[in-house]
Picture 1 (cartoon, rainbow, N blue to C red):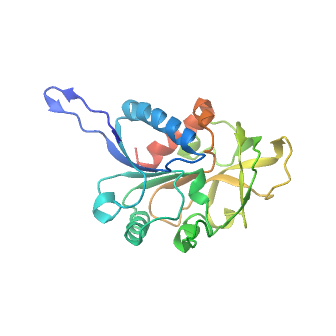
Picture 2 (cartoon, rainbow, N blue to C red):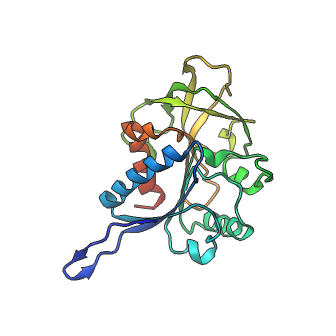
Picture 3 (cartoon, one colour):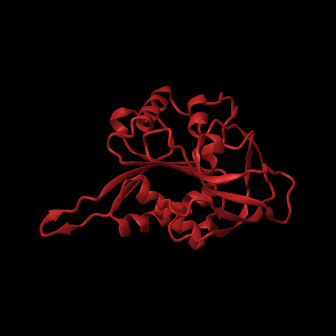
Length: 244
């Protein structure tokens, strides 16, 4: 599926400013979020003049395929079930800064799942973390902006509220290895929850890699696209990661 801003301008075919490839998790509990994201991204593509293509597995991914795109969005697709060719091409894409990257939610499901071993490189990319637990029955919480000067945080103020998220925890905080842009205040969990990390980053970028990259943990419910702070964060992140 392709969403593109296309038109005719003075007899010439319109070319978008940049091209995006999004790998979208297929089916399952995240389908409503992915479906809502596609609708919102279609609107963004028109407003910000980019095209977006979708894939639901990694079969097409190799160096030549990725060379067509200036931004790779991991739309809840986990860091396993990738072909060896796709893994190698993606690592090169990120390490050499061939394009930008935005990952959502399930992109940090790092560990042994569905018979797949953990992808060590991807764990390093995400700050050398491993998935540990999650809040199964959800909680509403306040997210504190830690770097308001970063372009992705523009217009978000000092904090914003995210409702009914299934906050992940990891074996350790990624903070020593990444630049944290925002963290969740676990004391603000409503209802109160016992699954905590202490220091709990939820938006970060890994500046040890050449590609502009940003991970946004929040991404379980479709209602997120009705949250102005969330859509501002995603909008900012797309333009920043694509060097716009």
